[in-house]
Image (cartoon, rainbow, N blue to C red):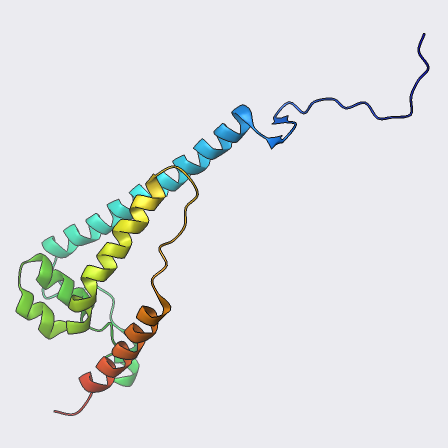
Length: 158
């Protein structure tokens, strides 16, 4: 009979191999995370399409349930976002001039926002680690500066 040792006996963990988490448990956790991410991405896409459909059927000029801007309501000044809902509705109806009159900044920045959303959606539904697209800092700062300038010019007395 062998003498007892004071070393601990290593029992293999049922979900891990020697190098850490691996095998079925890692795949199941990855698939569940990917499935959750895809579900969220699809839900956000469906919500965006539903909002666009609602703007097509119920334009802001005929429906009164759209929210009002709290800045415009309290200060009587147009913020950079004022008129965005009306502009999107006009774009969905094919009226570019009307959309530009409602909010030109929104109309000009919409293609960039849609490209960002499409890239984020593509990254969300593919396998692997999700990372948000990172626009250059200069683009963000210049967009903020243009929005501030747009707000000032927009609120000048006519």
